[in-house]
Length: 286
Length: 45
Image (cartoon, rainbow over all chains, first blue to last red; front, side, top):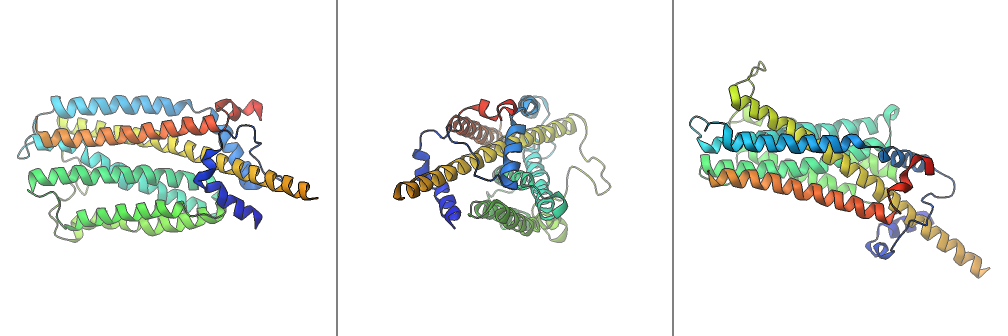
């Protein structure tokens, strides 16, 4: 019970006033399995040079997408210069719906399955969902700009658009659920179940253009037989934009994952401070 | 160049850059609070 009370205090912003927790042994008396996992993950995060390499590659491919998309590719037939949004909007949608939320769903399942249960998966799920929510918000914004130039409106209650907005709200809700307190295991189980509920909307968004008559066009990059509908420099630029979003997603998820580790270590150090203070108080009373 | 296209590219790149920078700065702040990156060195454990 004392631990729970202190854990709540550990989350409190007022504890941010403590200038430095470096002198505190960040471990509770009697190392639990969860503490051991956190220690291993912290040690493993020390040697992570590949994140920098992925970040640099992501930056280079993004710059290449900008140059090709804005200056090299010709205006798209019918759409004109507006068609240059093809190199941003679909790639962001890929990053959010399939890459980020797909990873969150798989990682949540891996936590729920006892054989693969590890807090690593919960952190991956949370980090991926956060980056996915950013990409999805950007998908909606760039889609809205696309709509204004091609349909004449910033927003319409089209099935694809509405369901995508609902998906964003679902994942924002998932992130809110992640901030609710509890033991790491209880939190991870709650997070995973919430993620699976949110994931139900992903295939609905995907098939919405086939199931209903929508203003949003049907799949325009690949045919149902997985053949490309676009060719030449346009296909190359689109491919590079997809690679750029994938690399940036990997970089950001890894960085967010490392932040989660450090946040948990900080929280554990604060709990340790609280316990030491209580023990000292009880000794003083004696 | 179409101003809508420029707006689309700008909002995507700038928002992602701001998010990435905020994550990086937060990591630096947390590392400082925990006593620096060397605390995570496997040899020191």
